[in-house]
Image (cartoon, rainbow over all chains, first blue to last red; front, side, top):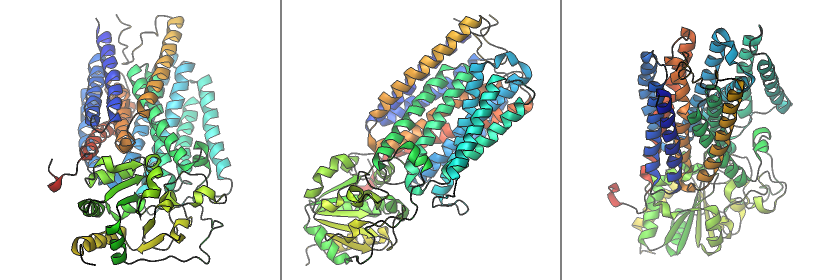
Length: 470
Length: 122
């Protein structure tokens, strides 16, 4: 056995561990093993590379590693409401690493070993660099939108001919890439390479700017996939199978999540990427002539007390108001009275896949009471009370029948089928997607206006203080 | 043995064996990619929907496997300093992802419990 073989066997082990790591995520009970397997795989891959190849400049590796410890720990401590932007930010770092390594290898080979720049390898380098750098800027813009940084527009930013300009930019980058693959060491090649890098950076920005907050779960998933694919391309460049395997696992994960997100919004990939969602468009069933029916905290508390089954529908508004801990208190109050209380989780509720589950788990609500849309919808007609907390589009019945509505065809949680609906809403403005919600004007719906955290806090107070007194 | 470890830190096993062998190796990489994608799709499909956020931070950490490439460029022999510097930046970026990705995944997964625990102690 040579050092090369030892290294390859270590890579083989790392690949197996990566697969196990994801396999264990299938159940919350075994999921933490998945993290340990992932850490083990990563350490094996790092040390195999370090020891197996001709690595001589150790400090060039150790110092960046040490520098990465403080930001790494800091990024792991963010509040859970900020997890979407943290995730987008890490995709940016993943893209940056891939893009940089591709750039390094190209310029190294160009000046030292031009015979290494075969057509196959050049194709991989071009793919790696385009994917890596567009993931970098695209993710940074997504993170900025999620963090609500002032100079990045929150609402979709659109202008005439945007699609054409974006496609032309990407097309030009791909064309230059093809020319590079054909003649990687021509005199103009380094300049063309830099132009490809710049175009990819620009395309990333232009791709995400027109996308609104409601589409963020899909965009984050797509960027996740791109980050994985850029690692795959790096694997082709470096002839390294652990990179290809791990990158492909990540790429397919992003792919599956994007498919789930797209299905949950009844939209296609291309529609998300190129058809700006959420232009404020009054749908036919507008608010004209219709009025909200407000309800008092006392009244709502009484109806909740008399219910035997309550379903809570959380949405992004819950995260904004940080209401999950108050919801836990409400949950406890209801459970104490023997009332069944469950949560209906729409796949695109929040700003990233699974966002609501994590927030509610943080508030120590048992995950067995977090129910997916498809499982809870058949039970909705039996629910006495449906409490909508900061969710909007995912409970809008217009999605079922109003062909003029931008969310037409999107699967929704059947909140309107429950006996009574309480909707907590901060103001009378339409939601993020700018669409009026029919649910709020239904005969069975009563509005609780105010900050979600405050309203639920008042409900809890009413329930804990006023129990038994009517 | 000179072909086993390339001076530039690149595994060049196929490179010097001849054109045919090299093409073969590229083909085997495509096979690995195809198979790994199918395994990924199969495994990810069964991931609990509850855990999609931790899944994403875990795959985030896993895709930081790009660190392998960064190690080669930052620490390998024969690279000019400016390339080495870019490699060190890539090293920093992927290491940050590895550390924060695994830590936050673990932190989130700790929160998923079946029973409500009064007092917050397990």
